Length: 290
Figure 1 (cartoon, rainbow, N blue to C red):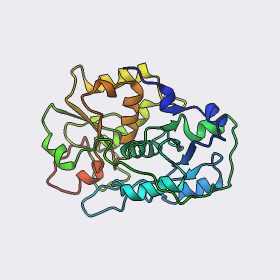
Figure 2 (tube, rainbow, N blue to C red):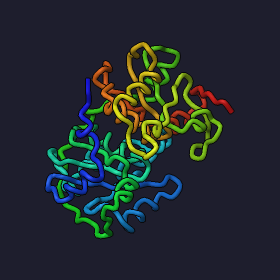
Figure 3 (cartoon, helix red, strand yellow):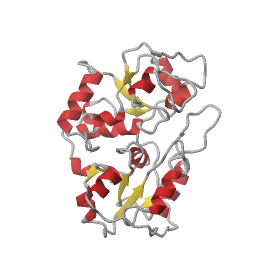
Figure 4 (cartoon, helix red, strand yellow):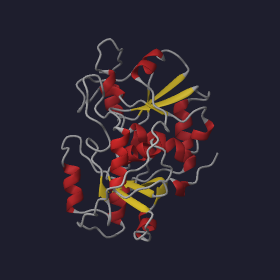
């Protein structure tokens, strides 16, 4: 089934012509895992006019626990309060961007879908494309509101570590890992204390979904790439993972953009805990090329 690209992506030029829309919220999702405060500082230094800021650790995740991965899902009501503070309602068009090809912004897109919000888009090319087009940047911060979005959590599927482990060695689940090839192989691990990947997982780096300009590939290219990873046969289910359930959302987005989601029995599930949760227990098997 073909996908309407305009329902998922907006170009810098298109957004620049609609900055004054009353039914629109723009959100800056820039974040640096090694320097958690750098994203907000960058937003304060300059952002797309009217853009709010979403902190990956504080807004798009809940606190880490002894058993969780690095970015557990946020509390639904707290997330609803966040959306309300931006003035977002069920009919609001929410546009997310970052400076990482959508690698972080896609987490906000997924969370919006998770709580039942359909009008969620990414800025194609993110802030780099906006700046390259010579479009305006401002430091003025938008005013927060006191509203609350009526969340309906559970509108996007998730898969637990127990379910992933139970599916090992079975053909019923295709697990796509969005991390960089060297991290997946266990050759280079700059973030988590243990290197490698879940046995049987397939590597699909999230940035493979982007062209050389950092924009999403066309539906045809994405379909070819994704079908190659999924194999000739139709898997019973697809789940996406990464280091902590963030860039995995990018793969879910790409699959919808490619028009593959309607072909699946179910929408691809997000393994929220991902690798950072998987390695919490030494009893869970790991594979590594190192």
